[in-house]
Length: 112
Length: 113
Image (cartoon, rainbow over all chains, first blue to last red; front, side, top):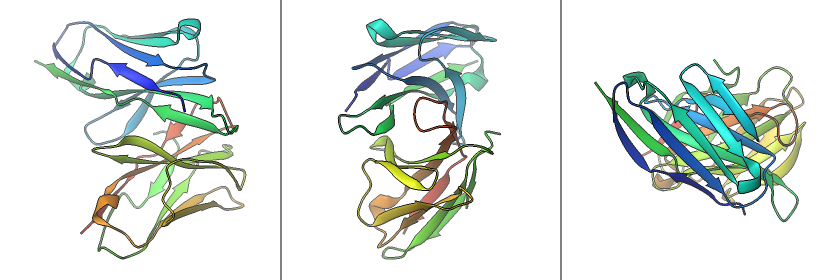
């Protein structure tokens, strides 16, 4: 099946700093989503971005499908940005079934 | 609020028991997905249903089963529970079979003692 790798695995930032999270995937995809899992375990949709660039406030994301990677930018980080950021890609397996496969996540800690 | 509802939020049960987790998808969504999140395995895809039919199977144990009902809600049944089944179980829904944005419920935290 498709492989999804996220980097870095852990990131500690001072409040106000900027960061870039990366997601590499091993094959063509139909869907790519970024999620934020907050300390209560809730998975919050950040971006649905199979290709191109999107922005939402202090967050933006870019997916370059031809080169099989996506980037999530967080600017002017706040303590509420802490949590785990997941990249998930949707693709058809060899057997013809569709799956949304998650990376292992980047754990972000923003300190005051 | 994602619009996906999961019940219960928390569940504590003993080894060997059977539990049922319930999921109501967003209004209009036909696809339902189940995921298991444990500390050592990350988010693992279990199974997908589309409009009442099973469409894809992931790493789902034989002790686990699921179904999607005519009103599109879904249930995940876990039987002969083991300590290792303790995890956060998520349900997600999307509009169509593949490629559409998926939205996740708040999860059911299962603790097997």
